[in-house]
Amino acid sequence: MGVRNKIVRVGFLVFAAAAAADALFLAWLWPDWRALARGPIPKSRFIQSYETSLADEAREGKRELPALRWLPVPLARIPRIVQRAVIVAEDVRFYEHDGIDFEALEDALHYDLDQGRLAIGGSTISQQTAKNLFLWPARSPLRKWHEVVLTLAMERRLPKSRILEIYLNIAQFGRGIYGVEAAARQYWSVPASALSRRQAAELAACLPSPDQNNPQTRSARFERRADKIERYLEAAGE
Image (cartoon, rainbow, N blue to C red):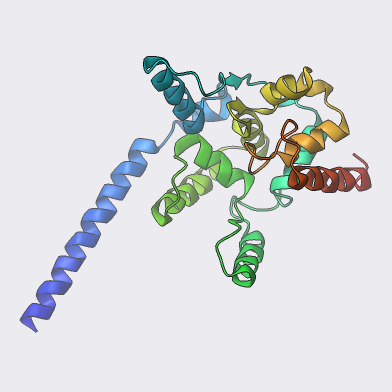
């Protein structure tokens, strides 16, 4: 009994230490929600990471990555057709859930079980916004936990319109291309406000694998996805 109690006690202490360390990490990540709700669009961790990679290349005398393209704009300058296209592509129940779409998670789980692998994550726009803003690309259960905590906190403190505004300005649409304004100018040489329905569908079709699927690569998967999004928009009268 003495040995077993000692093991239990050590296990509890390890768990408590890990929980305390995690709480400190979350406290370090915790943003000023009031500023985030009203201030300028901040650079995401992903944008900051890309800038670091560019700086590393410059120090090493390399130039392999394209320049960063990021032009944040207010939601009022992003047309409804672009907003709807991205919501259709990424999170059709965006305005109905509280940050976590349990129906989408269940669908993703069933798909993964059918495929025999972890293929779909079922992340909402809110989750992707939290991940891009505060976290890093690495996949792990701990990072997913941090994503969930930050997503739920964000949904309580920011209106849906602000979450969508941030997401549309920090989502990646190609190598070094962040936000719909930079993407519109890069791919079609027009501002996002001038995008057609087809262009909006193609923009949304970049997600979630923009390096491989975008208006420049025009992969078969990209074309099929753009066609599907455009048909949905047309059927909805957009």
